[in-house]
Image (cartoon, rainbow, N blue to C red; front, side):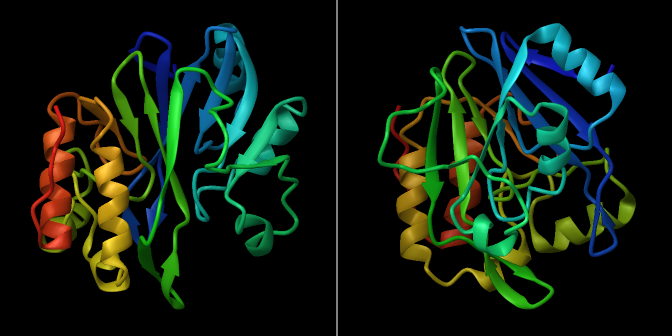
Length: 241
């Protein structure tokens, strides 16, 4: 099976992925709404097995590209589920105009996915092949399972990953700690905006953290996220209980 049940109405599926030659893997998250609709965040490659498993859970009604990078398989998913709504950040329309985006993710409206809250993680950048690049990432909170869902705003690698990935994340960040990497540390300059975003995230009552790259943090995720961003920002952060 590709889908792994994490909690009630919450699944993940993983596949291999290499970035700058490193084996980092990637992870898709699936949430089942009360309506039996499925929300797919950061879709992975479509396969007959995956489609069969999803169809066994419910109706894929929402496909979300959560930032400007995690859209690689969105078109495949949309082709497999043409009736689903494809959601994405506004600037993805500029970056990839060939993608048929149905709806832009915006902050000035109530959540279109009951039980799934979201916010824009402002000011955060990564170091890409052409230099610092904005992620425009939206992060999500599944209220019933108290799960924070991140894409590229934090990583958590461990001994389950190739030795070179372990070595470089030990040196650059994100090894057995829920935090950004050296690439984000170098690229991000608007740390006041990032701090404001982190403080908003910390208002959510989460325990588990699902990341797109690394291992799922099952317990004490809020404290680990706070600690990782205190290091990243170089300041203390309040953590509401």
